[in-house]
Length: 577
Image (cartoon, rainbow, N blue to C red):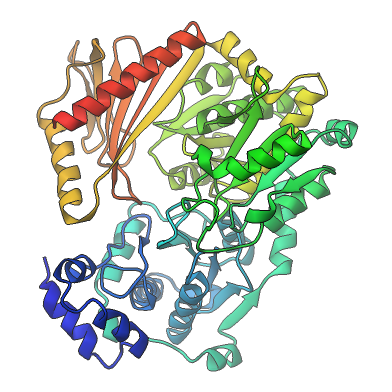
């Protein structure tokens, strides 16, 4: 641990730290615990980039920590590519406070290193950045966002030339390059000089048009949309984020006429005044949307998070109430829809593939099997789905059709390499039209899937452990689970223990071993004797330890009871540790 007080004093005395930052630091003078939290370490540049609370200090998101990260990336590009400086880096940002400042600082650091920066003229969705990297032929991309974190957070994600977030071993190499940078050594170029030199390039509408064209190419039923366009009603909320313009545009252009936007949440606002926690996984985020939906009689409610890569959906249940679909439910509905419609239209490839993360519902397997499509599992994080898409394109062995993760992110098509709530919103609206044309709702469609394939239910327990002690506690929990592995969950014995820090997995009943083909990761996965499963992992973006679990039953009630029992069991298990 660094000497946090010495680090604090050095920032107060340094010539390169601006007066506004020093004033903020003077305000905490004498507050030892606050100084310690801000300076006891450097904000970690991990495999997903940076994410942290905004403010002054080495352990905070600010123009200096962002500059350090960008200098490290610039050093890496110059050292490891022959033409990276010419190909340049695309930069996008969302609606969070300071996002535009962090984007501009990143660009000017790149420019100071002779690397061209393509910067969007205003906020844009993360998936459009993924698209832009490949469309412009850039060597890399940067997006300033903290996704669905609370308002005090911001973040910084790095993409490579394939349009996906960086994966191993490049992620570790970039981390080492960033860690080697000292903040006083970060290079900055004057904005006017960067523009004059042709190094700072503003991008906008031309990328929007190409991106939307690619999103619309994933639509499957324009005739059905037109047939119900006059009667179908959609309520949409961007939750003060970047989705407002692209989602409304694509829905309009494929034929939807009655799209009602929640007025209180329409405009970008980094304080997220109506929600606080702008997460489409949280039913409370949809309070205003539900109110509007009841007023207009909406068929579906769609919401996107601040950087528009995750989507939440609410539909009317059998009682006529709006109920939220979790990411597994939405993903299952969309997977079945995309596969069924592609088969019906004879555009389903014979070597088709669907990709999901290891903590995503197992319901996808029987659905994919019915359509002769192979399912691939990857580690948690959409970057691994992006990596798999790239692998398929190189080998030609499989054709990617659809991918999703339980945390409300999915992608149809290969124009992007990250989850995209714009294409998801379009397909959800189209699926709503598809069912409406048959006199059904999305809820009816989901019930049909459960009756056909079994009542799959999944849950997640997230335990927040903040600060220094929290980090240590999370490590202790993972260490304890490895040294003293649970023998059962809810009375059902453990069959397989999959420790993703090891080369092989073990069947604890038979002693059989199975090779781990995925990258090493701090993840523990348990398959039970009845094929239920439990997975434990620290969050890569928040101070949390997450426990995922899934069951399958013959009725909805049995599945709900089993998942509730599992939730109570894992909570008790972690509390005891």
